[in-house]
Each structure stands twice: as structure tokens, then as C-alpha cells.
Image (cartoon, rainbow, N blue to C red):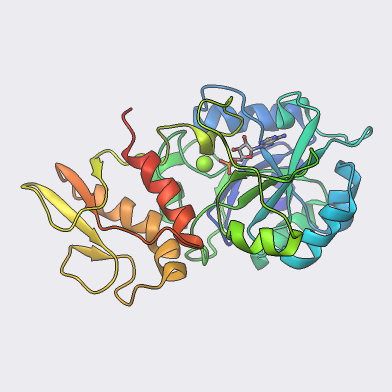
Length: 299
Ligand code: AMP
Ligand code: MG
């Protein structure tokens, strides 16, 4: 049923291990245009093409030994690879924003994999939320943001990773970290045996995940907080007194999985502000801090 809707050009939101995706047939211009429309994405930024298996990723891209090595190590999983586009890729030019490269990912969530296999085509899927707002990690987050704009949402329960995929650029000699995410950059550097190039301040923005304000709740966000100002609610990490705790035992994977849900539920209280405890800036903590810095950025 969901696969049929996608094959006919409709939009279906579905769970992945990172966040819920807003899926459309990546080979169909109209379906991809509908994704931008449903999200209210202001610009036509390139989207990630989700595939059912490595063979499909090889068909869309100019695959390389390095791509094979990271795919073997981390797929299916929360890692997106940006590679040169194959000559006969069949994708809508809206997916790649007419760039000569494409972002591909093989997700791990069983529902996502079943859907991709049933559709038999690459599925373009940005996060299933209105542009700029908090990413969805449950089906009800998706409905709260996009109800009436999509044909269906598949409910696969809460997402286990909870932050978006790491985006690894493999179009140049030195691999580049285009967005921190579910696979820690340190782990990729160890596998590749070389440091990743990082986004330099002032460099052109190539990913919405690099925009200053993103993932924004309605309430003002204050970081590195140890207590609350009047009207604020405190989102904690590690043992402390607070309205809600990302991980009382201080576990970064647990905190990442809880992050967007916590922001959704605190925002629903309509507080004057959300104060957030410091998160250690290592491993998955870097992906969490990246999202929090954007949630707190001036809008
Ligand atoms: P999202 O769908 O919100 O998880 O974001 C997908 C990310 O992949 C965006 O930040 C895109 O800009 C990025 N992306 C997709 N295609 C490319 C590409 N060809 N080159 C660089 N980044 C890309
Ligand atoms: Mg997003």
C-alpha cells in the first residue's frame, strides 16, 4: 500500500533509525517537487537518495574503493555518502539540485528496508518536518508537523539513533565531514586512516544541516545551562534536577535517541525558554551539540 503510493508519485513518511523521513520517488520530478512543497523548504537543496542495497548505490554513483570500504563497515546504518553522480542515474535533477554529485544512504530500520525493497526505486527522503523545525523521531511528531500534506506515515515506533546521518563527502582526494551525525567522525577517521576535512567558517553552505538556524523549537534555547531562569524549563544530562533528562546516567547514545523528542515535549509546554545542560563534545555528543547550536542560533 505505502509502496504503491510511492510508485504513483505520492508522499509517504517512514521511520529510519536516525529520524522519520518524508519519502518520494527519487526518479519522479513531481514527487520530488511535492517533498519541497510539503516541507516548505525555501530553496531546492539536494536530498538524500535512500536505497535498498549496495548494488543500487553503485548504479547511482561513480562508486570507489573508499566508498566500498565505508559501506561495508557502516551500511545499513546512519551514514550518508556523497559521491560523483553516475552517467545514467535516472534520478530527478531536483534530488541533486543539479549538482554533479549525489548523497546516498542504505538505512538500517527494518520498515525502511522493506519499503525500499518493495518500491524497487531510490527514495528521496529529507526529515519529515516543516523546514527549519525540530526533526521527528516518532510518527506523532510527523503528524503534528505535516498532517494533511502527506498521504501516509508508517509507524515504526521511536527512532533508535535519534540524530540524522553523518554525511561523508567522497568527491575529492580528502574525505570531508559534511555533517556530523549518527556515526562519530572519529570512527570514520580510524577506518579511513586519515583526518576528515571539516566545514570551515564562511565556506559556502552545501547542506541545510549547515545552516545557522535549524532544528528550532518555538521557544528560545539557552545552552550550557546549569539551572533555570524564570519561565525556563531545564533539559538535563547526567545526574541533576531538571524538567526532563536526556540521559540521567550520562550516556550519549541514549541522549541522542531522546534529543528531538525531548525538544518536542518541552516546546509543547510553551515555556519562555528551554535551558539545556552541557553535553560532552565527543563521539555522538558532537552530533548532539551541532543540532543544539543550530536550535539556539538567532533566527
Ligand atoms: P536531510 O534530508 O535534512 O537529512 O539533509 C540531507 C543532506 O544531504 C542535506 O544537508 C543536503 O544538503 C545533503 N546533500 C544531499 N546531496 C548532496 C550533495 N550532492 N552534496 C553535498 N551535500 C548533499
Ligand atoms: Mg532535516
